[in-house]
Image 1 (cartoon, rainbow, N blue to C red):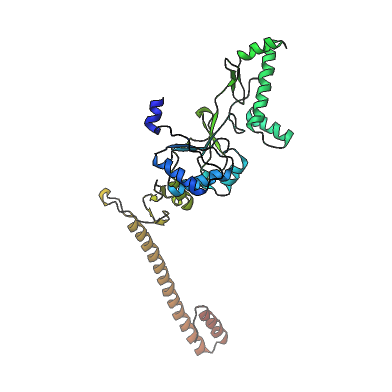
Image 2 (image 1 turned 135 degrees about the vertical axis):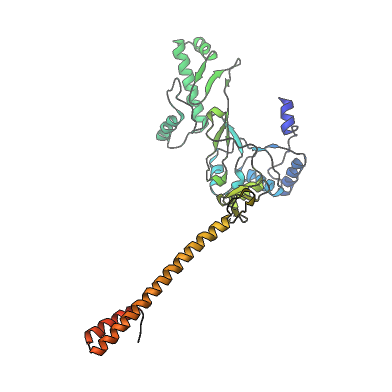
Length: 337
């Protein structure tokens, strides 16, 4: 496993310790050194959100592109999600881990007979807030103890402990079992911050795959690629952002954001050029309009000519009513004697 890890991701680098009181220049020097050492996966331990924001902004400025950024105990925090919602796109794709998520898709627990969604609803109705994994963990611990008591059919500590040692309990929280020394053994869930360009702000489970609610993005897009997706609205939906931050437009589109319709000649395939198709269609429309206009003018000319003849005859007969009505009809045609 170590050989595979080294082959794909390189050697493990020693920790770089940076004080919270260090300047941004010091942090920049550390990140530049990590970049020069070809670090591919970066795990960051910080106290405040502002620190990880500063780190990601400097990384973008240095074009320090890594396969993954891991920031334990931060991605699921409210301030992290709020920052994503407010436009902090540099927080996209950051990884974290947790024993449990409120959005878990596991089935009902064998003892509780509840899903995660049902537990969340009950908790919110009771306490008025969304439970953290700590609340779910305490509930799961109660389920484990109660199940052990039922299986032991006894309250004697020795009997209950024996059932706990042999326990394998499926719950909405996790598969609960205990190791030889007592601590619970369970697989943690890897969560990933979503892409800001997808207009999603809730971190999603990406591993283990059977419990994933979103696709695991690895390696993460480059900083330039992410900025391109934000600033060009994913190339206007008519192309793909490249790793260097430019749009590779689909056939028939051009422009910095693939926002301009263009024509692609495919003479080798014998395909009719889009330009000719558009021009031909425009010619048909123009010809139809011109023909209609000519027919309208011709009909108007013939009508005016006939009305003028009727007016002349009415004047000769001194038929005032006919003269007045004919003049009105001529006025409708724009004739002004």
